[in-house]
Length: 337
Image (cartoon, rainbow, N blue to C red; front, side):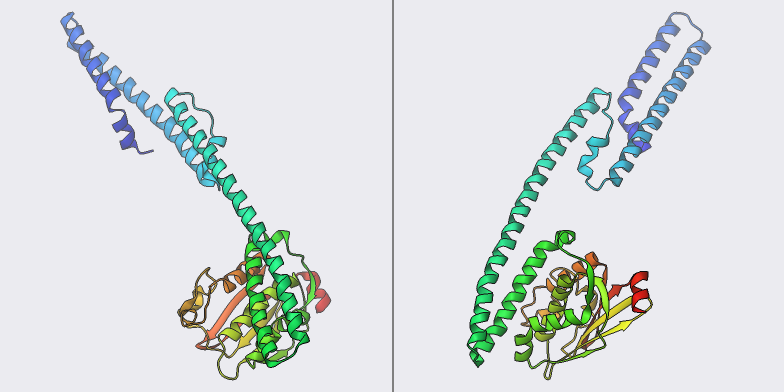
């Protein structure tokens, strides 16, 4: 609370006191009192008034600063009436009631929005699970009737499946802790599963795949890591050049295992690199006819943060390397050492 503003608010009270002091002084002088007596009373009155205003200012400032500190520490600041003490002054009680009404209205709106989001999320998840049934049926039909046309259909079905998976994981990414299951997994198995998920797209793009030294075991959720790898493979296919190649490898450090996915595609411009994990950011490459949504890498980063996996990207104009860094605890290091 500003001292200048406080004094400005107290101007009416100060003026009333000054008028009262002047009236009393005139009355005392008219009654035959000495000037020194009148001045003494005048000075005492001023001292009492100044002391009163100072004490009130100090007490109010301390109370309001405490209230501000409590508000700053709250995540949901509209809940401040719940931790406030009910004021004693009549005008302050009016404002307190207004805040309580605003809080109630806010809670009702938040509850309604949360219910809408929950219903929408459940609908999206249900729709995705339902749409996967015809996708699986079409894949079986195409695999049982092998032809160049069927292989093209299978590649497009993998594309569709990847987009549906992206939508499903986006819907679930807000509460991943309810969906993931951390256990010891073999990175080699997850990498091969992700490659199998995209086998027709990889074959269609004539992608050369090499796998080197990935016989490592880590503790994480294989389903979520598989989804992340699918996004990386999809990007390598989307932004490929002539004679595309994809390379998987791991490096073991003191307490981490780093899985690297490298391609020889068009790369990422240096100016775009710091922002590729931002939601909706498509970059220069995404705006040149690649139909990028800016969701894939954002989801990967979000899921990696939830799982405690480090995610970094490197690119030198041509080719991109994505590194997934898995933390190992002392027990795992002892077993694998």
